[in-house]
Length: 355
Ligand code: ATP
Ligand code: MG
Ligand code: FE
Image 1: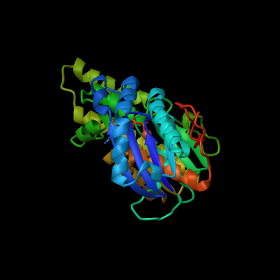
Image 2: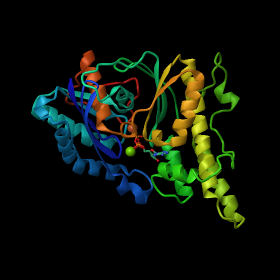
Image 3: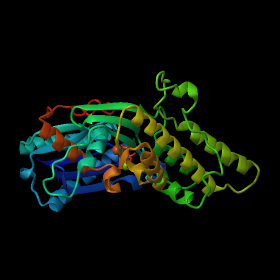
Image 4: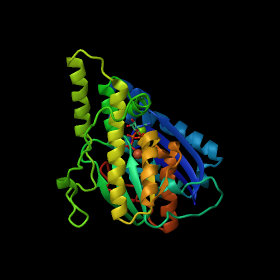
């Protein structure tokens, strides 16, 4: 099916067009720059930006794909999770398009769409499914999750997630402490390249035996992460240098912070994957752009006999093509369409693949 996908859950306005698993267009406009002076995404600003960017982004996507709205078989849109006001802009726009064109509407889950994007290719007509026993590690500014995906349209399970900050959020907050600006991920990634990752030993959250337990008797947070303690540890390290009147070793702190994040992300993610029989692991979310994460994950996946798939970075960050990709799978599986009065669901759980 030819499917149009709309994504507005955070700061990216994305419109993508796919035919089955073939990617035809992926147009993204981001309001990231408008959030720079606040050091994080401001929901109200993001929502207003979506309102302005939606129609131009839609037009460009249709133009790139060389299709008209009348040609599409379905309109897919992110219903949640995400920022309520931001979600509502995409959802309202999608409903308007569906109503005006008579095309069916598919409200989909943003996190599952991050997994669905792994099916896209540039080949014509190649219909494929996710391999059996697929898992997904999603790491972004708003999410840190490990999923088991039995079927994209029928069976998605949350194995673990962060109990406080998301990994990308930890990067953003730590970069702020180090005076490296926003977004923090790329800034820390760059600074870390000049530093020593073993200069400081920062905490790996929820790795103590009482949280982890054993495979037979798992602890409450066996597969969960926590990044707030790490941020505090970095703040304390900076303070110690400042109080002593010494220059803050920014590069060493950045490298050591990054090593702690990447180490605990991959270690706990892979343990969850292995204990759930996962043999193919898909990486998604903006933090997938991190070189050290991809390097260490590749190393540890190889050691565990798990096949790692990393989509091209523009498909890892928020975009409309991933929404279209999941929409196409739902159409093909005969799941949906959605009613035209579906609400935005800011806290939509992964098990709710579509609404
Ligand atoms: P959502 O959480 O809804 O997917 P988001 O806008 O928060 O949306 P993305 O746009 O996917 O997430 O990713 C942005 C995040 O990725 C930011 O927190 C940013 O700091 C982080 N990031 C980007 N590049 C890198 C990098 N090279 N290393 C580490 N983190 C990075
Ligand atoms: Mg974003
Ligand atoms: Fe996302």
